[in-house]
Length: 168
Image (cartoon, rainbow, N blue to C red; front, side, top):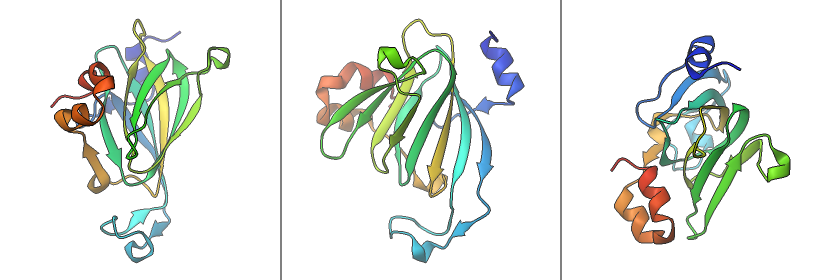
């Protein structure tokens, strides 16, 4: 099995400074959806879809964030990932991404638009390689990092997880 540095080099991954982890965009649809055809929450045109590789290490995590589009996560290799989702309804879910179906893990999972989500390796993990497909395509204008205090006030039962997946 490759070590994390070999995976980073083989896939030419770069640090994802705004969120954490490593990534490389692998696809951006040439089809563009005009802004007037999208809900008013989108400020302008968007590519129909985008896709990235996304890698987590023990030193990194995906900071809790939300986007205006649906995100589809795909697990490729490595150790299991735990994802915290905080829904507008107040519901919270923890999803395990991996290919161990017998352990109840999911190799693919959809995060609907507007749901707060962040993830990390399960304790003791070395690295995890995933993919994320977004439709309409990802644009930084649609990305919002969570405020720790606001999430703690709304979801105190997941306080330790929220603290682990937020920087502010």
